[in-house]
Image (cartoon, rainbow, N blue to C red; front, side, top):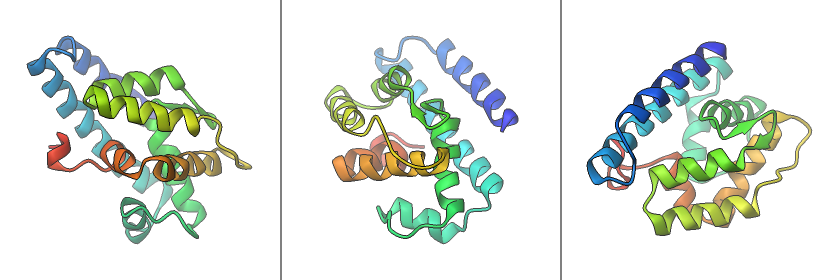
Length: 158
């Protein structure tokens, strides 16, 4: 996991060099870098947790029922790897900054609203808490959850 955090720190440092994300050209560059980072984190977390591809596909399709422990730990690795959750606690400031950089203002507002509803996930461990956070986020605003966690080209993804 340490390699993951070092890689992310480098990617976010590069993103900062591109300028203020509210300027159209630098915002697009920042979005591309952050979306690429998401893909790297997903791949590293899948390898680390040994999650089955079918389980990840179920998550992508919004299915949060009856998942294996590996899937819950994959979600924890992914959310923690993006720097918005630590030790089962949502990092509200970091999450608000991330959605503000990744989404249009009206979508960011919806994401922040969903985040506020889900900011205190329950569970016996970090994996369960991260999974419950993602599940709550999906339940609160499925469209925004999909755009944030599984973006398509229309959402500004690569």
